[in-house]
Image (cartoon, rainbow, N blue to C red; front, side, top):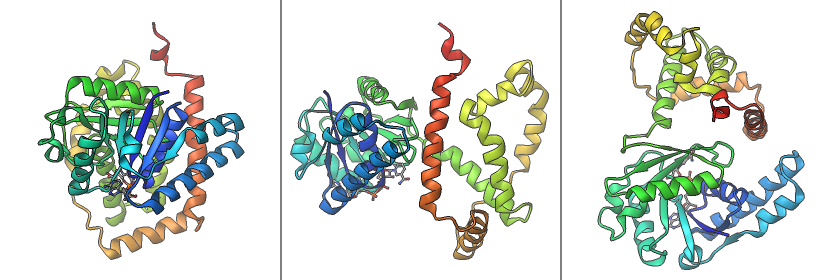
Length: 318
Ligand SMILES: NC(=O)c1ccc[n+]([C@@H]2O[C@H](COP(=O)([O-])OP(=O)(O)OC[C@H]3O[C@@H](n4cnc5c(N)ncnc54)[C@H](O)[C@@H]3O)[C@@H](O)[C@H]2O)c1
């Protein structure tokens, strides 16, 4: 059984515990704040219990996962024999550099180190390290134990074999690694998300529509297709002749539509946040966020199960 170490056990680190435990790895945890690690372990147990109650996990499997996770009091103990280390410390380059410097002396030199950073360029934090070639970014989408995509981003120092090994270990853990060729601020996922968030906020602020209408065109429109095909895959199905016909026929409309976008940077001022929050609470009829999250988590699992049972036709081609 291969060992994975998770360094930093906040909201993302704790979800990584579930990823690797359900992937059949031995998982070691370490956090400089013992209470955070205890909290994460408690969350891990309770989340597994919820999955058993909802019928997604058998008692046996739950027990196996629980016994393979070990909180560790020392970093040295956590990284012992680790083939892969998922750094999930604070989103601050100095904090990450402190962790990497410690890993440099404490971890096996063959271990690959993936950073969960949401958008930082980790190169300045690893550049001077002797084994800089084994570090890369492995950015998950929250929560990674439910959403499989993970963005692998090399620094200028990352070895190709590091990318390959990380890809293979994360695939074995049930994730879907996506490789970028080089760093760009916010990577793919958050750039695309920012573009949607920006336009959604603009449409509400300018009075074109309310929050509920904007969300409806996503959850009952675009999002239903996006969960299956992605942007280019959807474009390919929007004309009988595929993407070539679609872009040829609709390219000009897109050019006009894209030119009409305002590219206005939202203020995220107190009054803007209050206005949006009030509309969101009305839309959600004040149902508590944790109840909505529990429903969301169940539905993501069901959608993933359906996709496995009835896979995209290209997956059936030899
Ligand atoms: N929260 C999200 O939605 C999200 C999504 C994707 C990626 N990320 C990224 O994941 C990383 C973790 O995010 P988070 O929201 O879980 O942060 P968090 O602040 O909740 O957790 C960070 C943890 O790291 C611990 N820590 C600090 N210094 C440490 C050290 N030297 N050694 C070990 N542990 C240490 C802290 O005690 C804390 O428990 C960040 O880089 C973040 O950008 C976050």
